[in-house]
Length: 91
Image (tube, rainbow, N blue to C red; front, top):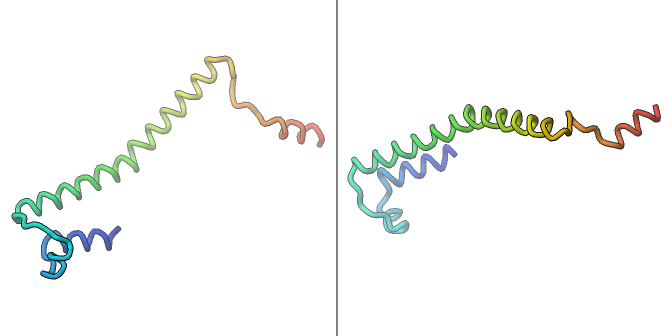
Protein backbone atom coordinates (compact mmCIF):
# COMPACT_ATOMS: atom_id res chain seq x y z
CA UNK A 1 0.00 0.00 0.00
CA UNK A 2 2.83 2.35 0.81
CA UNK A 3 4.49 1.79 -2.58
CA UNK A 4 1.19 2.35 -4.40
CA UNK A 5 0.64 5.54 -2.38
CA UNK A 6 4.11 6.82 -3.23
CA UNK A 7 3.68 6.09 -6.94
CA UNK A 8 0.24 7.74 -7.02
CA UNK A 9 1.55 10.79 -5.16
CA UNK A 10 4.49 11.05 -7.56
CA UNK A 11 2.18 10.81 -10.56
CA UNK A 12 -0.14 13.41 -9.02
CA UNK A 13 2.44 16.07 -8.20
CA UNK A 14 5.53 15.74 -10.42
CA UNK A 15 5.55 12.97 -13.04
CA UNK A 16 8.28 12.76 -15.64
CA UNK A 17 7.37 13.95 -19.14
CA UNK A 18 7.50 10.42 -20.62
CA UNK A 19 5.24 9.11 -17.83
CA UNK A 20 2.91 12.08 -18.30
CA UNK A 21 2.54 11.17 -21.99
CA UNK A 22 2.36 7.41 -21.39
CA UNK A 23 -0.42 7.66 -18.80
CA UNK A 24 -2.17 10.45 -20.75
CA UNK A 25 -2.40 12.61 -17.63
CA UNK A 26 -4.19 15.96 -17.74
CA UNK A 27 -3.12 19.28 -16.27
CA UNK A 28 -4.59 20.20 -12.89
CA UNK A 29 -4.08 23.14 -10.60
CA UNK A 30 -1.93 22.61 -7.51
CA UNK A 31 -4.92 23.41 -5.33
CA UNK A 32 -6.97 20.62 -6.93
CA UNK A 33 -4.05 18.18 -6.57
CA UNK A 34 -3.85 18.94 -2.85
CA UNK A 35 -7.63 18.53 -2.61
CA UNK A 36 -7.40 15.09 -4.26
CA UNK A 37 -4.63 14.04 -1.88
CA UNK A 38 -6.60 15.27 1.15
CA UNK A 39 -9.67 13.41 -0.12
CA UNK A 40 -7.68 10.19 -0.44
CA UNK A 41 -6.15 10.57 3.03
CA UNK A 42 -9.59 11.31 4.52
CA UNK A 43 -11.10 8.29 2.80
CA UNK A 44 -8.31 6.06 4.12
CA UNK A 45 -8.76 7.44 7.65
CA UNK A 46 -12.52 6.82 7.54
CA UNK A 47 -12.05 3.27 6.27
CA UNK A 48 -9.38 2.53 8.89
CA UNK A 49 -11.46 3.85 11.77
CA UNK A 50 -14.58 2.07 10.54
CA UNK A 51 -12.73 -1.23 10.35
CA UNK A 52 -11.00 -0.85 13.72
CA UNK A 53 -13.88 0.59 15.75
CA UNK A 54 -17.29 0.76 14.12
CA UNK A 55 -17.48 -2.63 12.40
CA UNK A 56 -16.27 -4.51 15.48
CA UNK A 57 -18.99 -2.95 17.61
CA UNK A 58 -21.54 -3.56 14.86
CA UNK A 59 -20.54 -7.24 14.67
CA UNK A 60 -21.09 -7.59 18.44
CA UNK A 61 -24.55 -6.00 18.18
CA UNK A 62 -25.52 -8.25 15.27
CA UNK A 63 -24.28 -11.32 17.17
CA UNK A 64 -26.29 -10.41 20.24
CA UNK A 65 -29.36 -9.73 18.11
CA UNK A 66 -29.02 -13.11 16.38
CA UNK A 67 -28.66 -14.85 19.76
CA UNK A 68 -31.74 -13.03 21.06
CA UNK A 69 -33.77 -14.05 17.99
CA UNK A 70 -32.70 -17.71 18.39
CA UNK A 71 -33.73 -17.79 22.06
CA UNK A 72 -37.06 -16.12 21.27
CA UNK A 73 -37.89 -18.82 18.73
CA UNK A 74 -37.52 -21.45 21.40
CA UNK A 75 -34.27 -22.80 20.08
CA UNK A 76 -32.64 -22.25 23.42
CA UNK A 77 -28.92 -21.84 23.55
CA UNK A 78 -26.22 -23.31 21.44
CA UNK A 79 -27.07 -26.70 19.91
CA UNK A 80 -24.35 -29.31 20.30
CA UNK A 81 -23.34 -31.44 17.36
CA UNK A 82 -24.72 -34.98 17.42
CA UNK A 83 -21.29 -36.58 16.94
CA UNK A 84 -19.99 -34.79 20.05
CA UNK A 85 -22.89 -36.11 22.11
CA UNK A 86 -22.26 -39.67 20.86
CA UNK A 87 -18.51 -39.40 21.50
CA UNK A 88 -19.16 -38.18 25.02
CA UNK A 89 -21.57 -41.09 25.63
CA UNK A 90 -18.95 -43.62 24.47
CA UNK A 91 -16.44 -42.45 27.07
